[in-house]
Image (cartoon, rainbow, N blue to C red; front, side):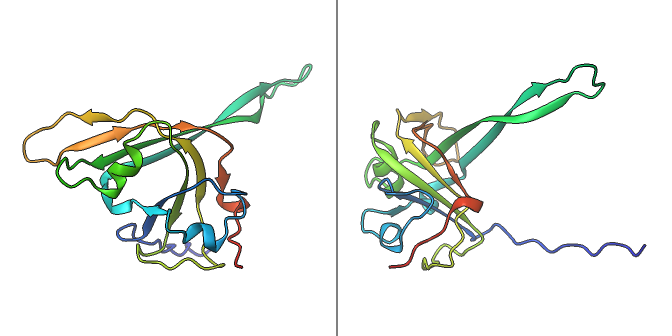
Length: 172
């Protein structure tokens, strides 16, 4: 058997977008109008380098069968969480700070990987996830010398997360 070819990846640098949108009518079918609305806020470059951590845990259900020597498992519920860490500027607040700094605001977070930050959305845009959140209390990241001031916020997940294989961008 011949040796397998090395599969070429894509650099993450400059190839991601984090967008806060007003809640979509249908998270699996966001429209171009919703993605491009004046209320949609790109916060990617207001986040720290490690400032967008979206985690998904698929809980497992243990299953067994009478006399079967093999343990079985099934997918159970999914637990999603996000932690935002964003730059804090008391004098000139950033867009990320203004959007994420007020508790109790509902957004759909649009996570897009593989496109440059200035990507213009189209019907062919692939979205990795749309996560419905309600903002929570932002807290200070303890300052240390030679660093920027930061805040962090872990929002509440307020609905079902739409994942890449379920999402289709709808053109007018």
